[in-house]
Length: 117
Image 1 (tube, rainbow, N blue to C red):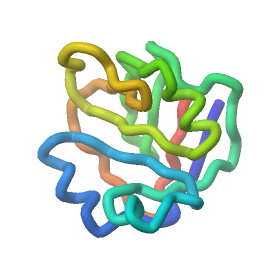
Image 2: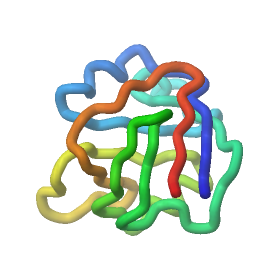
Image 3: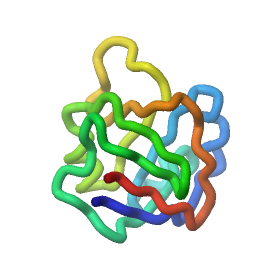
């Protein structure tokens, strides 16, 4: 299992609600990306946390991972970075992206627990 806690929410994060995209970054995110990112810190990090069919949760809201980009696990483990799309993939999945269903933007606040099981 992989688990992290939301430490900070960039001021522009709500503007991605209509597009149903959440950008996660670890605590060392560059200043220019913090405005658009949900900054989180790992409590526990599994070997390969991002796999199709696994459950992604924001507190009690659960989603199923439906697609995983080729670099998503590496970027997530090294930088705490992935882009999560709550929609159907159209064409090729970007290397650092995952897709999840159902297609609704999660409720996120400081202290939200994000888990991958």
